[in-house]
Image (tube, rainbow, N blue to C red; front, side, top):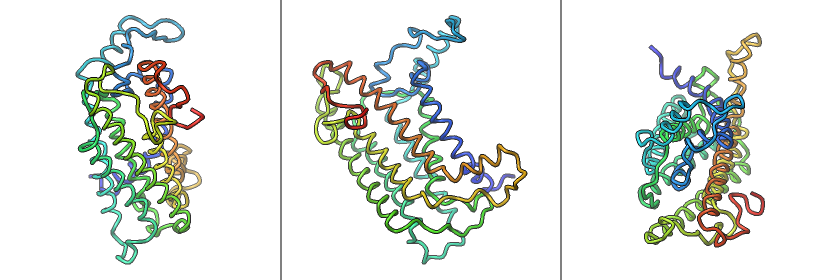
Length: 326
């Protein structure tokens, strides 16, 4: 029977590879109509062109008709779509995984260490997840937005693995339980302040979006109007920019708190296994890259939707997610 520590070790080892795969998938969605449909949700999904109307190429030639039909069925059939309000499940799963891993992380830690710097990002992660769950229930105006079940599964994967980045899990794989030296107080303070700032800004801009949609039920654009104010004056998706800042903050706070490569990996171990253990050192950076890539692609889609639907009324100077740049 597989022990809890073994299962947690497997999850810990898979964290970095999973985020690398997710990053590759979202980059591929930029050029793949099928993956683009799978990753779209809400207004960008309702605006998407059916997959059957897009050219599919395999080896430079148009793919057979049955592939067109399968892609259309897999991306547009109602049985594969779920309500966008099920985003709430992402944050609940993240809270449960984080709480469980944190509880498992406690044996051998004396009570006087409960306030050491290693716990600052853990507390901030739980605050972030609880805040997002609160917003899903009490702030967002979901309407009839849909997302593909594939995107739903990817969201669950993301939040299931996040705790393995933020919470120390070296003990799962048999590493010495003693913590690495904590990041400097200045580094932790900078990351914590940036995280709190990003969370505050994300909440503010989510509230702006929700108020607009609740107040524009009669809009000819289907409960959407041009968001204005604060960061919306320069970018279309400031809530995505704020989330990127949150994960940049986590990367700052965790940058010196990197798990060792694993004391039981010998020099003559297989290259693949050695690479997996080596990736553990950089999972906080890989997580940040994945989040930034995913949200930048999503922001580009939303920005295009705004420009198509509002035309000349949409501010020409406004960028997708990075002011003055992109």
